[in-house]
Amino acid sequence: MPSVVGLLEQHELAARRRVDGLREEADRIQAELVAAEQEWQEWVIARRRVGTVLTPDGDTAAVEVAPDPQGADAQEVPRDAAKRKSQVPMWREGLAWSVLSADYQRILTALADRARLHQGPLTCQELAAAFGMDVVPARVEALRSKAKRLVARGWLAEQQPGRFTLAQGPAGQGGGS
Image 1 (spheres, rainbow, N blue to C red):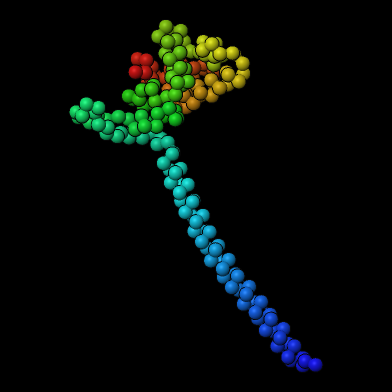
Image 2: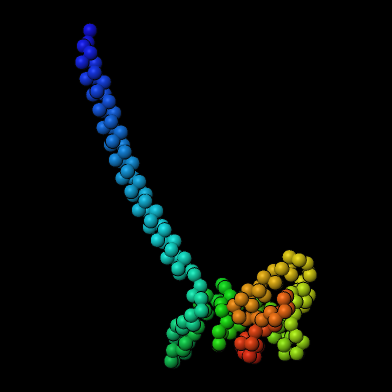
């Protein structure tokens, strides 16, 4: 019959082996956790960098130099030309309507024609009808959203709620060319 001390030593040895095995597993998991955290941090940094690259520049009127097609002197072109039609930039002197998408250009053209004929502001329902759209709430609200965005960026003015005209700056461009 084994002695009590011998049994205790066997249990102690088995417990020590189990603890050593668990410590090795914990060390392996800890190393794996550290590696996973480092990879996660790299993805966070990559996401920030992509976000920084894709974020609009705001009010800055940065200019890039592009070579002339005939190889003559370099000419300055607005940096917005590279990101054309992806957003509604803040209006600034010299910025052409061509930086806007076709829908926004269509709204500006309709309001420019209206201003040229001295006919005053338009509502979004009137714009929808002028564009040949069904004058239903979904279409009117889509136009209202675009018009409000143009107001917020300085392209349009809204002296009375829901009635839109060209803002002073874009109106002075003579058709946005």
